[in-house]
Length: 305
DNA sequence: CGTTTTTGACCCGCGC
DNA sequence: GCGCGGGTCAAAAACG
Image (cartoon, rainbow, N blue to C red; front, side, top):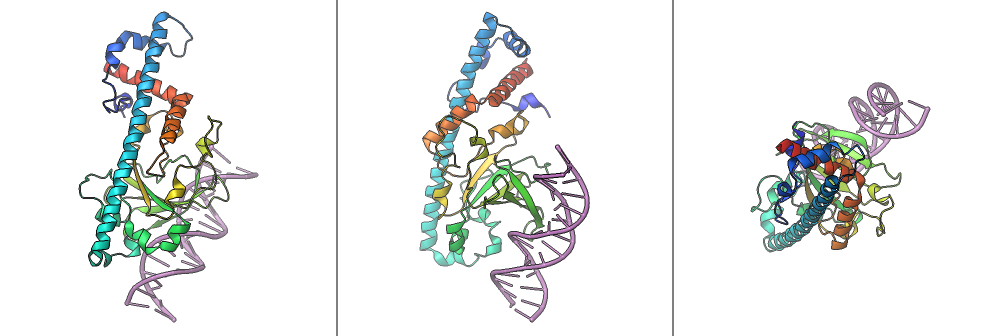
């Protein structure tokens, strides 16, 4: 796998034009890269590191922009879903006949908005919320679609929590096995997770979360600046509505040196702006993230050389 | 040696 | 009541 060719720190969000190459003469970067381990302080190196800080700021801004886009997208999705609900209410007999419990795994394809294509989109199964009112109130269900390498056979979805596998089954409607996990971070945590490959796209893992964590997120246990309560954002507000769905594409971050430390956790579609900024801040403060970023930037530049 | 994973057995709800 | 299928249990194996 070509490590450096896959990492592009710019997400082309039109935040800033790519001015990296103008600011970094290649030799200087190379010098900076190879002298990372050796404590040397030259004027050039300081310039390079300040440029790196600039780059870091740019990436942080992009990250912020991304989360804003995600929030906006989720809002659009919610609006679309409510439209769909309204439509289904007006045309009840058209949709009702096929609502069976065992079709719930497949149904996201049928109810997905037609304007989207590919498999990076996600939609909730409205029928789930309609068919199981009791359970929805008690145990909120959310779905996360994770794109992985197709060759990767492990049903592991890194979401920052600690899971213990307690079962695996081959279900009727999907040839790939479904794995059952319990949250093992706290003994009393009731959250369960089911992970199964998508029928349509074997490279997509479908993780279904049931319940709410009754403990802080492990990554937020460490002393960071005033994290309010340190609980997974917004999960409580979703308990009575349809299952939440989020799509993540982790295939690109997989080559990162320490991607598990920056695992995105997106249980909720609507992320408060304060939280977004906290996430961005904590990312930029994380030494592991900085090191990984540094390696990625340096690797890309060396590759371009 | 403690923890986690594997996997067959078992339980339970649902449809016929 | 019976069979089917999803979900869970628990003993054994694997792992660190």
